[in-house]
Length: 510
Image (cartoon, rainbow, N blue to C red; front, side, top):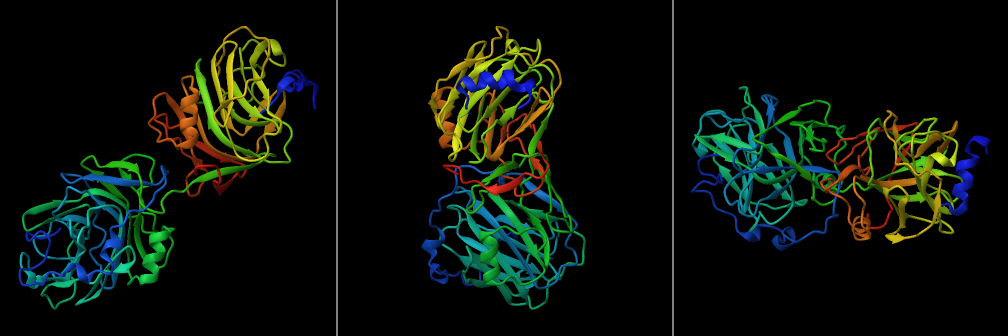
């Protein structure tokens, strides 16, 4: 250990721690409406599913009035076979047509294909381009499923050719009855904009009301095996014959990105909202593993005006081989003076301190608290530091105040008046670098003193990002990439540095 850190470490060691047509449902008067018996086990389709309390995956909420997603002129050369799949949660108050996906909107004649639902039916049809407002110019299939608007459903339509359309809910072929009477193939030879959530036909506009997620379009006939695969595991975007895939997981904005190589990005219209997706199998509960050598998360110059009170919480699992300091969260790194605050652990202690900005390498310029808890590197711990003011720092593990001893001698308030980068997993002070070794999840920073009740609440329930006084929240649930998104309104996104590894979180309640 270098002399430059002995003063800090010695005090830490005192006690360290750590659609469709005007017929609405698109079923002709002469078409036989299928009975619920056409559906394999309809009650199973409507059964409730347990979903995680929160996750980073997003969905689009459409109001049924004027919300939709414009995809542009992207599918005016579409031919059979073609398939479309999506997670949908039709609003329980919506009984008329809710368009899911439409290839050619605002056409006076039936062209392209459309996929939609009502409160009781799922249906898909295509137009032959010879006319409109007459079943002779369209063909498809509609299935009565009893109740369609009672929760999330994974719906798919497979259009193989003339007279060959299949419908699926939650991976089950639901049968149904033929609609329309055209004997011609699908026509898509005129430019017309594709839409998610809207269809205009025969002078009537229909809008989807409810939630939509993970819309995918394929230039092949999806098999029942493939449909079930993508129901349980989202496409990556690189699958063979994938034309387009919109997962709506963007952090904000009005653009929805196509994850396929075609880059058919869309634009949100009418104020559609991004919300956390509660569709089954959608919660990516990730965590970050840091190697203790040079891995960390760079948060940049984000907290250089921080004042008391401030709180920080995180799930941490310190590597059992790590005995020296593992920084958890640091507001101002790479300074010669003690400034901002830092929250860290050793194998036996948890501690948090702040600097007064008057100097460095001397306990006169810092203040905090350290608690000896015996062993902190024995599994997941929910750790919290509450810095309420001068000489008022409280530490918690798993929602319990662990006491501890005061560290440092400063009688001044915290100083944060110089720009310096915040970090997760790294602190440089007095020419020494310290790195966290282990796994970190759900780091949150608050501009208030968290109460013991709040600490226990957030230990047992993941945050939404909209909580009052939340100024930073990183849950590491991104599926890939080097960016970690801040889910708070601050948008303090961070960057993985030197190869931290994304892993599935095994923290409690995850």
